Length: 79
Image: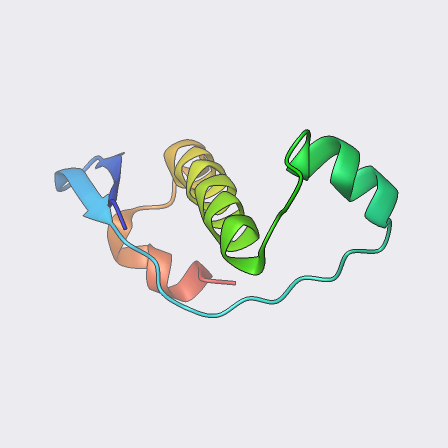
C-alpha cells in the first residue's frame, strides 16, 4: 500500500509500488504457528496476508536498495 523509495543515480529518489498475486503453502504447521502466528488464539488468512505483504515490502525495499540496477532497467529484471 505504501511505495518503496529507492535512490537512482539518474532520477534521484524514485517511489516504487508492486502489484501481483502470490500463493503460499505451509509445509510445517507447528513451526508456522510458533514463528508466525505466535500467541494468537486465532490466525486468519487475512492476518497472514497482511503479515506476508509487510515482509514482502521490506524484502523488496532491501533488494531494490542494494541491487544497483538503474530504475529504467528494473522492468527487465522483474523476476
